[in-house]
Amino acid sequence: MADTGTVRTIVGIVGNVISFLLFLSPIPTFARIIKDKAVKDFKSDPYVATLLNCAMWVFYGLPFITHDNTLVITINGIGFVIECIYVAIFFVFSPGKKKTRIIIELLIEVIFMVVVILITVFAFHTMKTRALFIGILCIIFNVFMYSSPLTVMRMVIKTKSVKYMPFYLSLANFSNGVVWMIYGLLDFDINLVLPNGLGALSGLIQLILYGIYCRSTKSDDANDVSGNRSAVELSST
Image (cartoon, rainbow, N blue to C red; front, side, top):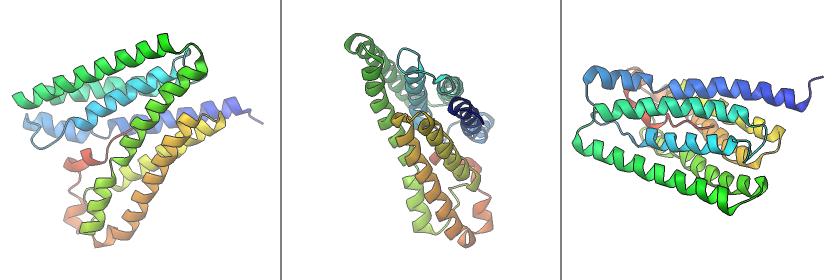
């Protein structure tokens, strides 16, 4: 019978695959941006926010913060690179004002990360206190990330249409939350269990709403979601 460590590794690998696919989900959006050579009404905020979220989780997984979280580092490191590419594409095809906003947001994130790193290294001297400090920050970020689809869910209920809430993306979000929650439970890491438990709940609610309103959605609406994914494509580990 496999030990807990082996099971946790297998679950983490599955989580890496699901999270990787989620990180790739905005590709149709950016293909459209590149084709049109303009960002139009798309927002850079989700990608800039996910960039910081990935950086925080990479830092959380480092061996002087927590132990045995290599798979958290790998997927968030990959996610960080992917989000950098998304933000770069957004920057290239944005008008002047949007470019300025992106630069300001990135500078704020860099300053924030530097401050967090300095506080962690010099103010906390044990892995337990460092993990607690970074874990709380990661939980806060993840709660915001997973609560972002609430706007879309309200729209679904109001319009009785799942036009802006693709089924497979909702299913992936649910699966992602469940897998990483299990990964955290196997080592009882509350900083992984809590936010991903909320993520699984958020994904479940999306699936329930999809089941309720999919039949009342017009077929042309159901097919017109590729350009509107940014509202629900925030991904996190």
